Image (cartoon, rainbow over all chains, first blue to last red; front, side, top):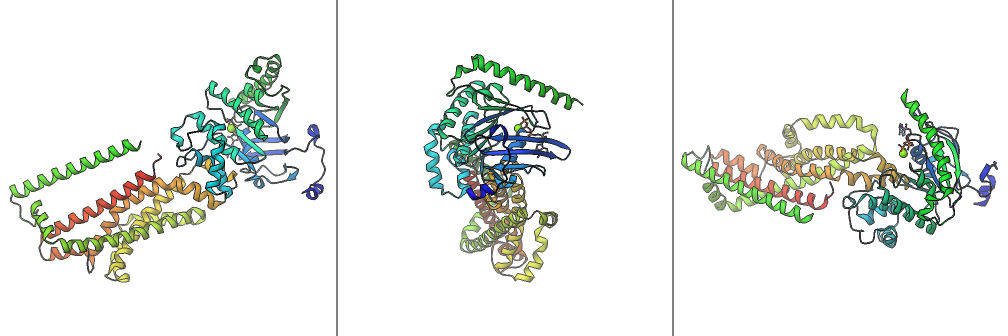
Length: 279
Length: 253
Ligand SMILES: Nc1ncnc2c1ncn2[C@@H]1O[C@H](COP(=O)(O)OP(=O)(O)OP(=O)(O)O)[C@@H](O)[C@H]1O
Ligand SMILES: [Mg+2]
């Protein structure tokens, strides 16, 4: 392991030289036919960080996740490093736990069997996988629901099952694409607090897409604001709020100042994306 | 959920029985009232008494036909599903095979029966082959349609867990296809009995189709009707069994 690391070319890592990033993207572009979704994107995520991503609709956030999950290969000329090791996107298949924008629960599997899907794919026996999942049920607020089928669950519960499926697939990097996007405001606040608890307990690196600036600040160590399409990082805002964060932190002056900065940046980009699509 | 399904099922069955009784009553009345000759329409009571007196014979023929239909059905289902899975795994073959299969399927299978009788003889084998052909095309097409229904995003999700093509097939594509596969299997039940009987009429040493053919030659129309009723009962029971399995195991959607 250490010998291969030595063979890697030593490049300046920039602002985050203190630790080696868990994952690092440079010059990542992605073109779909005539649509340029991402352009020269640069991102580095440190181990244990919770980084939130905001940006106008259609700016390429989900595309970025698809690349990180290994599902989509970026245009040639990119640099993609997992734990310092150069990789192509497809090398990342099976190495990142990915939660897509929809819960995509399988209707023929009950809660517990949906949660263990990734473990089964990995080759773990059903009995062992179910045992692990059962232990996690209370933490995900699903105790007593293991035998229910997805069509018997509320939206919030379905989302928790999808999150549990993602958590059970124990990988260093977790990608959550608008996990709370479809929930009502109240459920959403509960889920945010709950996610922070779970994240602090499990110490995983998380990349989290959202449309909600409050959510981005409340959860994140850093907020990445993306530009309108073609997407790249417009602003990396460090969130210096102490943890654990209480619900009333959203009314603190630091929080409001951060929110103002971020909203301005997002507003600028949203205007651009409207002008672009207006033509 | 289960309870409402069961009561719905039993209500359907009750309605079916009521309908059958009503039909039998009208049939009996018109056959007697209009004094129809047996070659036009024998009365229900005469058919029933004919069935009772010839029970041993009919039972043997029914067993014969049911065995052919079941064997052909099983073989046809396996071939149809296997071919569909294969075609889905090899997309290049699909463009050739799918139009061909649709074309062959649009000709009534009975058209192939003289050839099949020639190749496989007058025994059970030719009936099994005919049923297998008929069933396999239906199952092939419904399996393909089912496998195609899979959501690309679900495929992506399971691929992100590191799933191989085989794992995607087993854990995602086949379960997604199951409702359509089993619907095809339900439709095929009736078709399998029908094809077995028709092929028997064209040349056989036993079975309900053979009984019907012989009875027509002997101008014994009560016997013809008796065999038809037994054949319908087999079809209905087969259809009911698959429907039961469908309700039981395809509970989603
Ligand atoms: N497979 C694809 N084929 C063609 N175009 C695509 C594909 N995937 C994404 N795009 C295009 O790339 C752009 C970025 O899409 P993406 O889904 O990444 O946006 P997003 O930032 O996640 O948007 P939202 O916030 O609405 O979820 C869009 O214009 C979209 O139409
Ligand atoms: Mg998206």
